[in-house]
Length: 244
Image (cartoon, rainbow, N blue to C red):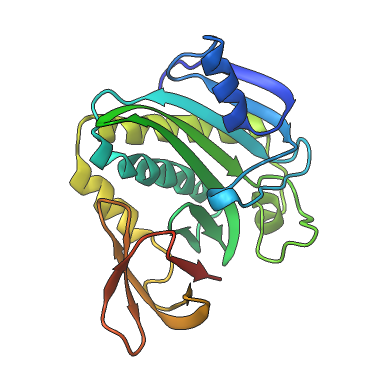
């Protein structure tokens, strides 16, 4: 992304909420990043909570305007952000890293990162995005959470958060260039190559658990699945959940 302005805060309800406040006051521009040491109301997809120990993990939100994208192409933001994060994780953990559709990154079969993207769309106009990213870096105890991990938990070493942020921003810049150049085919190919569950996974659908496998994700952001005993079918993220 080249040069970027970093707005660091000690604590906030969530970094996405902090960006919204700064937008209202006119104190943020496209490309600015809010970085919080602590979130006391961290949010994930569908009102899920994101909990994090103070100062242990990377908690940021990027404010970005996308003049070249249509409303129909907004899913590509999630794709390039997911790829940026997994490439960052790859630099520390070489194996067993996957994108768990729609908005998680896994390492060693556990969640190591989450994404919350809030798009500002008015009618047919796509204005901007608030891209919230949480990466578990140095936290090793996750009370009441069985499916979480961190970089330190896996490699045993503590990593400077500034180092992770620098690598992440470079990766985001790399993939945003591909997006701005409208190379959608490359983005889809890379994204689908890193998906979790292509050999086997479990799904939660209609209050029941099923077994099957992930086929691919469409340009719209929906997923194609093959549930055992059923024909392959497309699902939206609010209808089905991939289980660990």
